[in-house]
Length: 97
Image 1 (cartoon, rainbow, N blue to C red):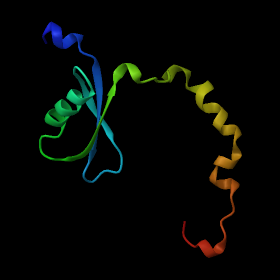
Image 2 (image 1 turned 180 degrees about the horizontal axis):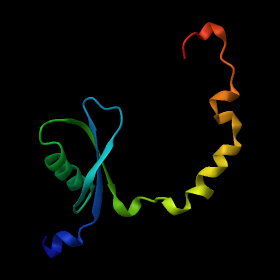
Image 3 (image 1 turned 30 degrees about the horizontal axis):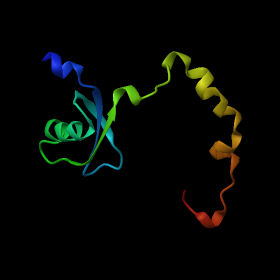
Image 4 (image 1 turned 60 degrees about the horizontal axis):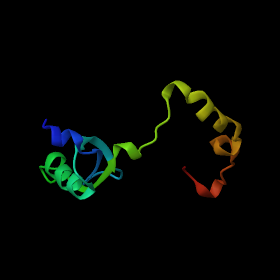
């Protein structure tokens, strides 16, 4: 990899397939800007016309939680019983659900 290429920002690439409902992370690449990242992602990750949409996100813009600290982040959801399916009664008219 050339020095100039290493100095370009790193972009995360997400592609939505023809059959898919969501974008899936495909990989990363270095590009000078978002437009170039989009073109490069098209060339690298959708060579067989399998994609219908591409997202490019600069890696430094992503904020992630730490898996080691999942307790404080996810445990409060257990206190919200209205989020559990057992909280609701389904009317018989609804049928199969």
